[in-house]
Length: 365
Image (cartoon, rainbow, N blue to C red; front, side, top):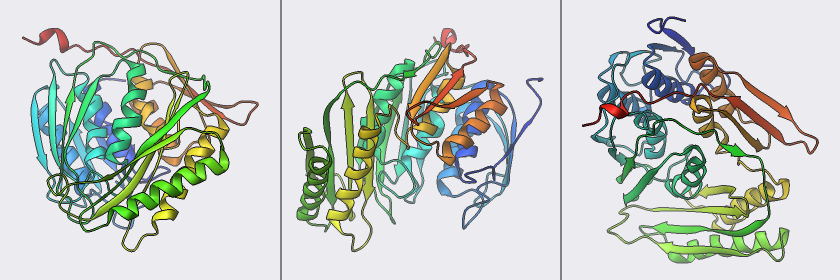
């Protein structure tokens, strides 16, 4: 396929949300292949580009000096033609509670293939619905991506929640020459469970304590002798101006597996239910002895496709997000993913990556 040939991505495929758009944009920038994404977020109540998607598009436009058609709010079709990936300092203010982590999910793979280090400063929501919480990105995604040879630092300057946002983070990314294949097959033994139960604004610390106590109780009900240490935090006014509450739990195994679960409070939420739900989900992962949790699956696909060598991960049932990510990766890179069910009923996903090399790194002055 000619590198200048435009690749059309169906944004309504399976999950029909922002996943196809995010992965298509990232791969377009890295491979310098123009794309046309149609039926963007067709399966959502409000189809088309939402704030977080529009800001990600415009950020990547700046990073790659791209030509873009259709980068307007609620646009259902987008054409994106990137040029060179330019590492450096970038700032994006969404003026909303748009997910900072989903914006980072789009730009991180791209900046790995820049010619120099980069910093991306984004204002929006750090802990919002239908997106990974910022603690998940720090405590679960980051250690898992290290297996591909990826290094980044994420600093939370201010926490932000729905509906106002007001959160602010800085992401520092070091470029790579080439990604290593990631292996996530050996579960090992559970070493510890930790995490954070937090609240902010006018929400009393007692609710964060209720979440923590319910989470620990549920873990001990399902796994009586499991070490479980969840920190209770009330964010100061300097760190969070608005109301927010949630919990993120993380399990660590002897082979380096890091699995996470989370829950986020809404108005008049039941703290003990949030803690119990997050704990039950994590306990389910531990009992099944999977190496990659449901929320991490889709985030690994793009790196598997780009890596040198064959990557594998062992998980539970594939999410629609993951199947959508596979569809985009196969169409953009030409790789093939294999999805097999083993004797224990676990799903094993494998991919021989294209071994993409960073052609800009040696150009850095």
